[in-house]
Length: 633
Image (cartoon, rainbow, N blue to C red; front, top):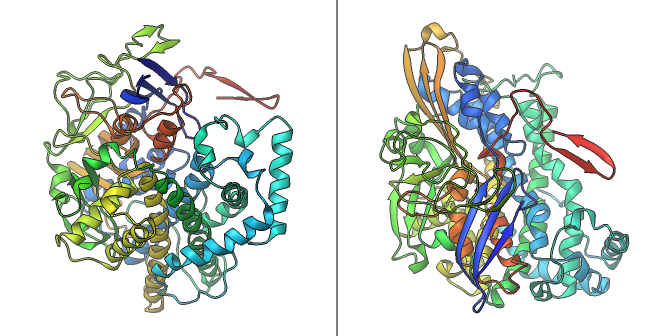
């Protein structure tokens, strides 16, 4: 048996370490460990603070998905204090969420994950003329997927962002790639195993097309986030408000945060999202994924084959509380539930709804620490987030020293990430999980589908037809997890058009309110209150839980997507989605486990929200040299 360590796993935020045990005779991964190597302390920072400020601290958990932590936080405080926000605030929050979803998924595919599938080295072998021919063929072959996106505003004309399917376009990018490779410093293309045999699966022209779009999207991606800047004032870390939003609406004041000019800028950005997803992202995704599936790469599903979980998202209208159940009566994206055994076929899969009361039930969602560097009074039991404890207890590795690890201790504690469980069982979360839950709920008739649910079903059926495989075969795989992100980016762009139309209509009707300040004064609050704030973030189901006593935060716990997927083992022996995914993956070159890395990257792991580090003495923790310059943290 060979033990292979990858530390750190790159192209993610935060620090992740993986260890796999490989049977050298079969190339099969027989066991795996994943470890978050930094500690998160945001819960302790929030204790004793004014709950109206919680969103501003909570969104500092991450430097990428800042907005979604702020959203979960304001929902959490509003749930505790029984606050209903105005219609405009609900529409604006949904557009900000949808924009994050589009931006996050597109950046993940091109800039964090694409180089697991395509290679700049192989792109140099391509013929630019044939690449242009291929691009046009792919737009013709897969372009119909763009028709699945409804346009209630109806302002879509000729696209401004359209793939430039010309030999000159691809020749220019090939020259740029050649200069980077010949320099000997691969820069953004560094740190990959370019001699791995999987890079021979695709024709060179597919490599050139995808790498050209990788570079092209570096410029475009900043245009996708404009709604966050207009409505939230800035990005990252846009502004939110307990009770609504801070962006006042006026069509008489050209300096108002929201006026006719700025709404036009938002609309233009959303159509850019539509074009980037329909004409670049999904076409590239289908071209690459189709070939990989044809080559037999339908592994990497792991826990997704056994159990997935979602919370539900996009409330159509303002709701009165989450734990009361009203939130789930208003949502359009009915991914709130748990599905078991989807890999046996959608007809045989088991569906369990997940609604308001479940988030307050101490037996439904718990966090365990038996194999995490935290201390509980009884580590054989899990704690509901309202009872959650954040007490660090670092014990070091199995081999090596506390600061220089050789191997982690799979029988002891080995990660700074806790282990969330649904009714004691591990679940995968994220776009793949949400698509499985929604598809199963609709196909088995558990819900009355909204237009978003119906779009999810049409998307899955479209891809199934392209791949010539049923959903239960291709969806719970590494390819399927990557594809679900692209499909959900299209869903997010559709949501943005839908809610922008509703915002237009409501403003035209004379409603310009963006905040409900009736319970802003703490004297209106109960002496003690509990709240839960949920959101289905780009990486998966996110929950914030708060207890407020005498106007201050007494306890605050965040159960985040990468905690669900990347958490350590539980005391019952259950493993999280990262570890189950690695065990489901064969390895061709044992000391270059590209297949395993591709599987981990398909989750879009972001460790910052599951682990944090700080030095209370303000001392320098690490020094990094970037092209001779120093950057210290």
